[in-house]
Length: 89
Image 1 (cartoon, rainbow, N blue to C red):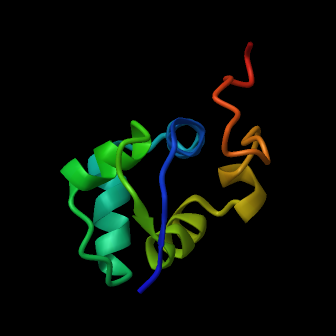
Image 2 (image 1 turned 45 degrees about the horizontal axis):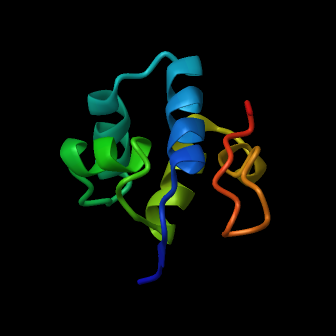
């Protein structure tokens, strides 16, 4: 299985989408688990904080749970790895 290296903007985007859907972390993880993901709430929390990596399969599951396009997950992520600036700066 492949993983995406997490970062703060990806985590913020996932959290923003989750909150817009009115879901708690627990509800989100429960829906992912129904889809077959073994993701725990604590691991999910790390992903939202930008400190955890996410399996590609879990991102596919989140897209289904949240009913959004993949572009929403990657919104405002700069194309350069050396860029450490937040989109708000």
